[in-house]
Length: 63
Image (tube, rainbow, N blue to C red):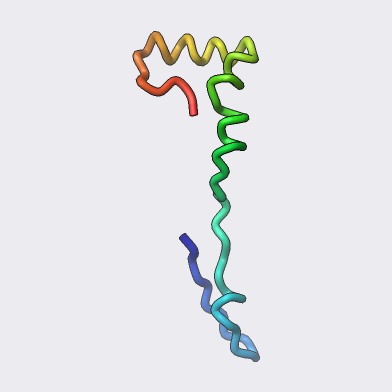
């Protein structure tokens, strides 16, 4: 979703110039590399996260 900022200075601006890009740009590969199951299993703290999510009964353990 993009939001627009209306600025009135000395020259008219195009819609492309005043459109602001959102900060979250999804990338599934990057997400799974950082938050995925294999990334969790590779680290001691990550295994602890998986264990606590299993104990809590989460259906989804990782991204």
